[in-house]
Amino acid sequence: MQKIQLPPVLAAAASAPRWQRSISAPSYACMPVLRREMRHFLDLAETPPAYADAFCLSLCEVISNIVKHPPKKTTALHITFDLLPQSLRLDIADDSTPFASFDAICKTAQSRLRCAETLLESGYGLGCILSQHTQVSYIDAARSADGWNHFIIEDRLCSAPEKNSASRQQRKPVVFLVDDDAGDLKAHHRMLSARYDVVPLADAASALALFRTRRPDLVISDLHMPQTDGAALRRQISALPDGDLVPFVFLTASAEGMNDKGILRLGIDDYLLKPVTPQGLERVAERVLGRREQLHRAIEGRFHRDLQKYLHPHLPAQFGPWSITTLNRMADAGGGDFTLHHETREGLMAVLADVMGHGTEAKFFAYAYAGYLRSLFRATSEKSTGINTAVFLQHLSDAVTDDDFLDGTLLTCQSFHLCPTGEAGIASAGHPPPLLLRADGTAAVLPAEGPIPGMAGHAGYREYRIRLCAGDKIFFATDGFFDVFGRQGGTYDADTLLRLLPPLAALDAAAAAEKLWHIFDKYLQQDTRAPDDATLIIAAYGG
Image (cartoon, rainbow, N blue to C red; front, side, top):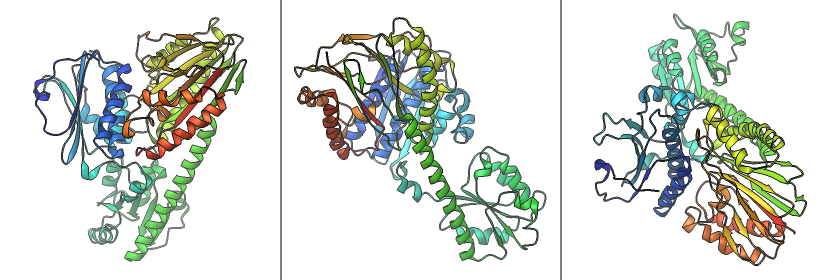
């Protein structure tokens, strides 16, 4: 990466630890390197994993949109990460067309987080960033002191984003409390505020307006209110996206009318008669929210199980003289790994893909990508007379460029073609390069590299070809596997793995995979980061 002159405001010496990188003509290809370097810096500084995970993901989100969307492309990029005594600060400066309507998009970005469009068009990526950090700001070139655009992300150390389930449970559920009686509103607020983040609202209109930008975990509303009553509020909220999924409890002075068919059809979760007691109100809130969480876990668990069956990487164990072993571990935190393959007379064409991101949304994108790539992959493989791995990746990149849905997340991909003669063709799209282990114990990194799919008009994919002899093996893997082998829990160090491979030369593919996976498990136990999906493929040529 070429150095450029630093902006004056960023060139000042820092007393706190700092990581800086300056590059010219930034592209998608630089993102994996930048992410790994920043992660290594954070790990060496013993930054809590939750902070490091959030900042690495946000770094990729910001850079991908700076590279792709502005009409005037950036010619230079400067990144500064400061470890301050009480906070962390990431500053990404560029000289592209400024981000338009940043503040306006921020207001609705988090409610659009489920959308599968781009940062510029819908705020999906921005919503992802806002949900993870204490403060996100943008200063365009016209307002900045140095004439650069600055995307600044900060976290106070006392309020870092946490990724594990225990920390999520510590967050107080948000309860909208709606009542036109000021006395009741104040009393009920006092009853619930110790355990919940209560938002008191004096009328239905205020509740509906706030609901559009802040999604509560529970709504407790008086049934009889002037103008818009509780029943009308429930109907209006249910008409909003996912509004019918939010639990709803009525407060009423009389049980008469609660059995009315119109009320029953609203789908309320419970009702309480006024005056309510603190114990009664707390009990209902706890029960309704507990039931909601139980259903959420059940649905999410079913979703993950279905995805695991569909996405679970697998390749044929034998293809002509090739023996292939595939091992995989699917983690809740990771995006998703999957494989595709197609057998022809010319050889076995296969794809190993890794969708970046965390949580259920990333798993959904992995599922969507897998379905889309399956048809694209088969069509490309069947139409091509001379199968070329780079051709498929270029088709994929063009598809991502032209499809707003696929553009909603990032994917790295590796395509390889195994021939019965021992020849192998490999092309990569932002994916870690594979490793070669010769029968004599010699190990090396294969130079198969290329940009992440989606770089419009960039025909940057080339097929690396190699001929194997009997007993030679190629090791393909995703980031979740490679990144565990690092310095002091840091980013992937190829030398670490290369030193581990020679003893595997005498083993067949299955035994070598089992041995290496056992070593991987040991390294994983020492790693403090949230585990990512990990996939290992060993293809051994029998001659």
